[in-house]
Length: 287
Image 1: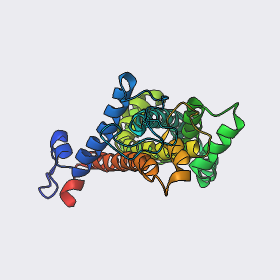
Image 2: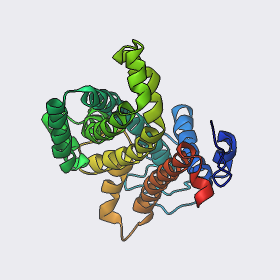
Image 3: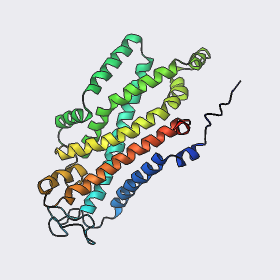
Image 4: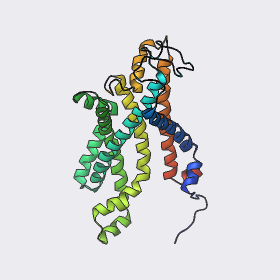
C-alpha cells in the first residue's frame, strides 16, 4: 500500500527545471558558450591568425575585446577558445565516464578482497591532483596536442568517477529487488543495464557536470604551462599566458579570457546544482 506524503509533493520534471534558478542561469551561460563555439566553426569577426589591428588596442567597436600583443582580434580568439574548452570538457568527461563507470561497476560486483584492492587504488589515485596526473601523462607522450590533453584529463578524472560509481552501485546491489531479480534468473549484465545504471545515473550526471568544469580548468592550466593545445589553437589558458607580460599596460588581454573561463565554469557548476534538483524532486521543496 502506498502512503502519500503531502509534505513532500513531487513536481513534474519540466516544472522542477523551470523552478530551478540554478539550472536556468547555468543553462543560459553554458548555452551562450556553446553558441559561440558553434558560430566560430563557420564565422569569426576576423581571421584568427591575422594581425588585423594595432598591438594591445583597447576594446572598441572594431575590436569588441581589443587586440593582443600581435595585433590579433581577441574576440575571435575567445570564440575559438570556447569551442576548444567545450571539446576538451566533453571529450575528457566521455573518456573519464567510460573508464570510470566500467571499472566502478566491475568493482561493485567483485569479491570482497578484489573490491578492497579497487577501493584502495581509487583512493591512491584520487590523492594525486587531476592536473598533476594530466601533466605527467602529457609530458610522457610524444608531444602536446589537443587530443593528448583530452585523453590525459579524461584518464586523470576517471578514478573519481570510478569511486563514486562503485559506491552507488554497491548501494543498489544491496537492495532486495536485486536479490529477487537474481532468483528469477536475470543475468548480472541485465541487472547492470536494467537496475544499476538507471538508478545511479541521476547522481552520476551531477558529478559528470562538475567534472566537465574541472576539465575546462585543467585544459586551461595545461595550455598556460605550454602542455595543452599548441598554436594556432586559441586556448584561454594560452591567451592568459601570452597576456601575463602586459597585464599592467593592457589588462583586458588577461581579463577577457579570464572572464570567459570563469563564466563557463560557474555556468557548469550552476547547471550541476540544477541537475541535482532534478535528481531529488523533494529538494526544491525543502529549501
